[in-house]
Amino acid sequence: MSHIHTGSCLCGAVKFELKGEFKKFFLCHCSRCRKTSGSAHCASLFAPGAALRWLSGEEKLSLYRLEDTNFARTFCSVCGSNVPTDAKSRGLVVVPAGCLNTDVDITPQAHIFINSKSNWDEDLASVPAFEGMPSS
Image 1 (cartoon, rainbow, N blue to C red):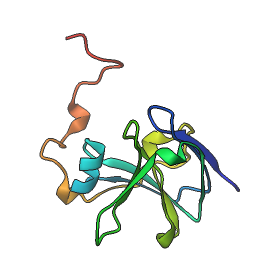
Image 2: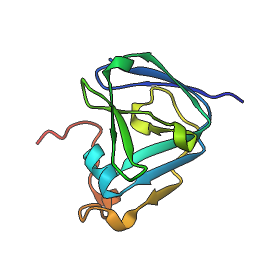
Image 3: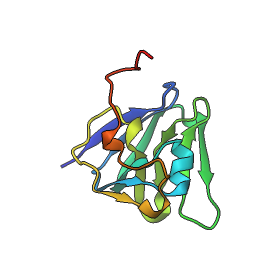
Image 4: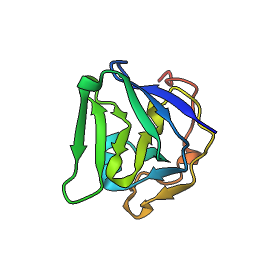
């Protein structure tokens, strides 16, 4: 079965299509992912053998690769949003879940690198939740 997903960056300059199936979905708490996301973790989908096609904005892409590691991020040079990284040497495409415009049929399978998580990343389920910005 062929799965087709689309997505974009925040400003809409970069748009893509991915043909393939997501096999893994991890919430990574490593310090590198925390720094690139500015949050508690990155939500990353892994699609081995998928085909990534840039629909627009390919010239706006920037790639950051951390030397001597497998860590890399592709992002829009206009708005800074993370977009898929085609890790050809590893035979997969890594997709930040938040850049997708389509639903996925897989849920997160694990929190990883939890030994690196922030000290404020505890018991977040007990924090009050609002449908929008709180009034005060």
